[in-house]
Length: 238
Image (cartoon, rainbow, N blue to C red; front, side, top):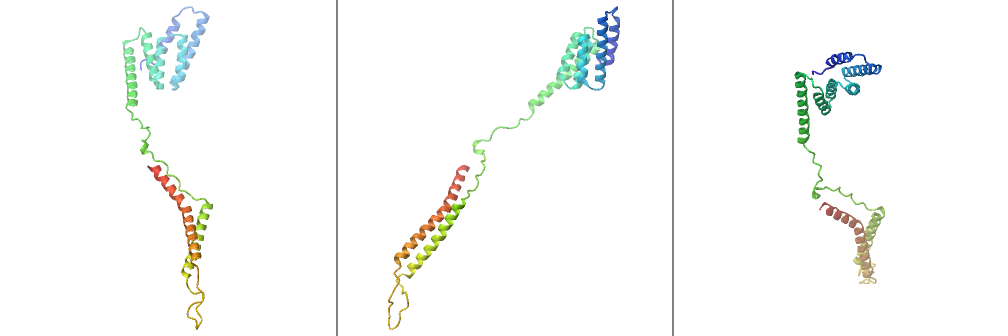
């Protein structure tokens, strides 16, 4: 680029030497300006552009040379902060009334390039695909399947005991019903008919009823919780 450090050095030293009879305070200011500016040059050459910008701004406060604005803009450009670079390029064009046409054309070209880069960046952001973060429809929500219902130990033991006990009592009742009306012992000759027969209808019927009730109760105590859990899962899926 045209506004390089070497060209600025060529402008600063004659400008400082052209002033005649400076006061001691002015001499100190010129010395401070030279130190700050040379530090900025060293930082720029070391590619420490942020440090170079800080020193250039300090130098501009000491002596408002328009060419410093150009170098500040160039440092911002190297740093990648294009918007700030463009602003300082524009300030330089306004401040330097004696700018050469060649330099003015190059500065304007850089401003146009920065505008194009910023426009391209905005366009890429605008056209970037947006992630669909919308929530799924209510019917599409897949609820977590409910855990399988597990019977407590006491209920499982009770149901099993009722089934086993009911089966035993029911079996006894069936046996009593089967023996009803039969001989308790085979008849002894010369007797033809039995002297004693089983009279177990009432006992058989009672045990059959009790056994059946126990079986039903035990089965229901084990089956009903599973049926209710299955029904609950079906309602949740709907």
